[in-house]
Image (cartoon, rainbow, N blue to C red; front, side, top):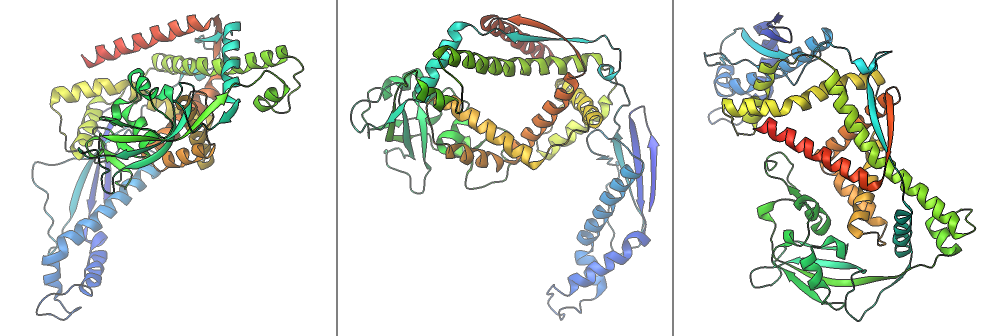
Length: 491
């Protein structure tokens, strides 16, 4: 086998591979002999089909499989031995002359692959003595915010009753059964059904008005299940129907299961029946309440609890500001780290990905897609260097713990602070972990957060304290600026 790498630019190369008969012939003949023992061809006993006929009938497929395995191994070995850092994957160069396999002949087979190479660069923010500074906000906790948080905790830890009579109330949470219906409002045979816990806040204001007219054990019919809430369709499908909704363009990516649906495959008409209602009697501000909210506390008076709640809110606000700080840190990294990318190769790479999805792009669309992707690509290149610099590693336990935490946060948002069965968290997290796209995204987020967290320990920071209202205005302005920048790129 002959392998030769030819430089074609600062960050591109061609990898030429020639596979000779001595490389493949022995394996090729053995594979045909093994296959001959299994095939039935009229006029010949099994295992006695002439080798020439086997080559003509099956040789092309067998040879193609053998050559592909040798190519994959040769490319992987060359990359490791030469310690190449690639962008994307090698792209096979297609000649004008159609490639032809001739299994009846001993001949050389030559292949050429285009390589995009990772740029060699330094990250200024990792260098000692750099003058780069990043702003970090802190949010002052107002007394009114402490009182509102205490009120939410009193509702969350109040005594739960299960009334069997009377109208549904806005503060109630309830167990609801959803059943898919046909046009005659009859249950669809073997159709979607699911039971889940919900709160009023989950629904749109229009639906909330209808729910307020329901008695316990009543039912209501929705003409469009995706119109009952302002949640994204993917989240609604997962939480209400316990199914994975494939977004547009994902239909051919995800592995099909009995819980995987496209938007058109999900019936829109559903009956929701109230199975059980939880009604909370707000808790009294006393020692028993304090112990429920914060076991093993040393609270003596209400003021002690208020001080603790202020600390809880401060920690919560720190998570808000941490997210913006990490975004600003990432933005500063991209702006201050200078390097080139092989844009022509990346354009071809994007085109190859689109061809796999059977959605070819025009030259104009390719250029636009590249422009939209460059910032993300630059970040991925920088992140890979940060991961190596800080030796970032993510374990399966890290992924499972993060999935559990995200499931807990999502359920708390949906339930609006109401109590819910803790087993729902585990069930929801396990369901999310069955989705490989979710797991991949979660893993990437963990890697990014860990790398940025370690970088944050070394960077110079300027702190700026603001109120919650001021903070919300800052975030709103930043989001508007990001949206405007995206619109410029997409124009």
